[in-house]
Length: 322
Image (cartoon, rainbow, N blue to C red; front, side, top):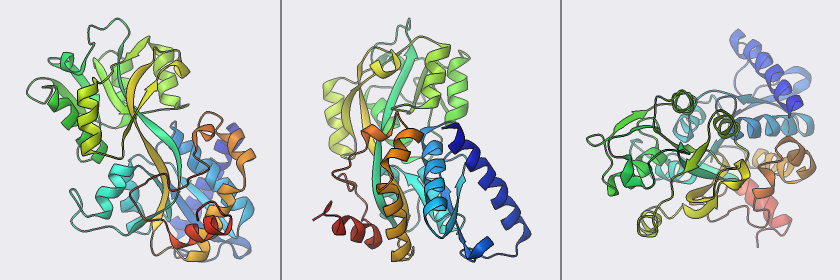
C-alpha cells in the first residue's frame, strides 16, 4: 500500500510539471510517446484515493498511458465536473450522484454523458455516535449536532430526507454540511454528536475514528429503511460494524464504480477495463480490505448508468456479460 501511495505522489509531481508548463494538450504524448490520463478519486486517506492510486499504477505499468491519481476533495459531482472540463478522463462515483447527473436533475442544468467501466465495492453509509451516547434512533438526533454531507451532494440530499422522516431537520437539529475530512475531525474533537457519511470496508477515516473514540452505528428502523429504499432503489440494507470492532447495526450501502464520459475512445475504455480486471493479485495486495467485496461475477451490478461500449466489449469477450 505504501508503495502505491508513494508511486502516486511521484506521478502527481510529474503531472504538475507537465500541465504547469502548458506545452502539452490533453491526450498528447509524454515521454516515450506515452499519453496522460487523470483519475479523479478523492482527498487523501479514503478508499477512493487508494483505488485511484492502484488504478493509476496498473494503467501506467500495462498500457501506453501515464496515469495520475488526482487526490483532490469532492465527491461524485466534483468528479463529473472535472471530466466535463477535461481535467480528468476517469473518476470514481456512486449510483445516486451518477444517476442524478445522467438525467440532468438538480444540481445539474442538463444531462451529463457519463458511462461506467465497472462496479467496484460497496460504500456503507454510516450514522455514527459515541458508544455512550443516548442517541438510539434517528428521532433521538433532534436537538443534537450533526456533521454530514456538503450542500448539493445527492447522497446528502437523500440522507437529509431520511432524517426529515424522523423529524430531524435544520429547525430541530444543528446540521453542519462540510467535507468528510472536516466532518470526521469535528466528530473526533467532540464538536458534533453524530457523523453521517459514507465510509465502509477498510476505510482509513473510519479506522481513525474507531482508534480515537468508542462508537456505535445508529440503526434505521425497518419501516423507514423500506421507505428509503423504495424511493432510492440504488441503496440496499446491510449489517455492518464488526469489521471495526463496533457492534453490528443495520446500515445502507450502494455500489461504487469507475466512470468516464461517453467520449472516451472505445479502445481506451477496453484497455483500462482489461488492466483492472486481469490484475486481481495486485489489487488484493494494494487494497486488501476492499477488493474481496467486489462482485466479480457482475461488473454492472444493477448500476443505473449505461456501461461504456469499450468496457462492455471486454466483458462480453471474456464471457462475464452475455
